[in-house]
Picture 1 (cartoon, rainbow, N blue to C red):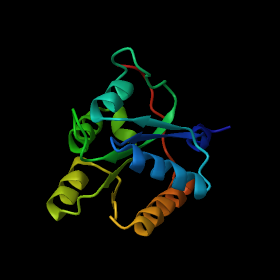
Picture 2: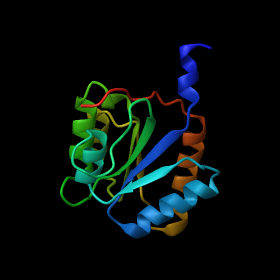
Picture 3: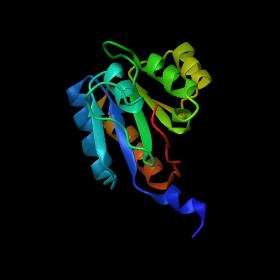
Picture 4: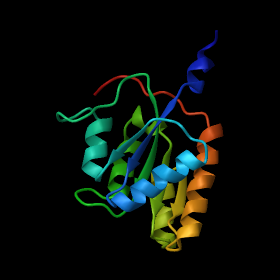
Length: 154
């Protein structure tokens, strides 16, 4: 048994998305793409940061788990770029792959997210079929990607 075995554990998908309809669509299409991983939904940037940084009395991450964060940019309280910045500034949390999912296709914003360290950037097509397709492709990506586990609490 070598240390790489931990890489194949179940990855928990974190969705930070304030639009319930979009969150449901993401969930439904990940399931259609064959992704059966546990999904935890957060309604704003503050909720997902509290979870990751183990703050407050809501749900908190557990050491040794592997996470992928699907992050909307336009959210109340804290927007996605602020969340991305804080996650990538942390020595342990920076290992989490972060996929930005947003309606914004502004090249400056895409560039900023990549500079901050996002793994991928998916623009929500306004057109339903395009959005479904993007999420299916994301599902295929999640099926093959290796994600490191995150250790320690803050």
